[in-house]
Length: 309
Image (cartoon, rainbow, N blue to C red; front, side):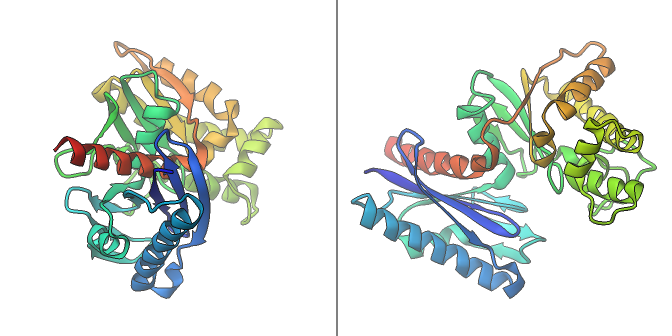
């Protein structure tokens, strides 16, 4: 059965799949990233996991994978196949594509995790009916993927879509990027977790607990939640003004709150618009499989490019 290897590498874990020609997940697996053992160990874990997937395909699907697609966090030079930098994984300038091609003996496509997830959401998920979309996952940080005609715009330097570093409150908290008041310091799942832990007096409370408290009518939780939504709406309107997408796809941990997030967010965005057109604001459809599915799409795209060349 014709298939490709798809790997989605996260800060703590890796999700992987063998993906068929129609996008079907023929086999799925997970492994710890092993970042506590250092950057070199993480790279070896990725290589070994990919080799295991190749062997599984040979044994259970009757043939070896035709290609591989890998999504990684941090700064990625997709054209050169280099994982430039990832703070969570401790690596710099890792020639990951070359290392994987040597281990697997097949062509490999390397992509940025959020853009790769956005590719899947755009083609087979919540953005599949929209020619122009913006995918924004709200997790530990906030990033974005700009979808145009079935592809993701990477930008001139590979940094397009970094919506989490739009400054929405210049007097706000310090951000790791060096600015103050960036969107992700105020509206990410991590930011809501920090704010709710402080407001509730429970150091173990997180964003999901805040959402539940909002649903039960807790005034302190509502204040924390609305503060995050106000910041998020301000950042999104800036992005909408620049990009004019037809669909705005919201994913990540905060999106799991459902209409507790989406109802006030749609209202907050709409009330800030003047001349801009309100896009469809929808939840992501693929959940935590988006990265794997997107990595599979990268691999199939690579194969189709090589055939056409």
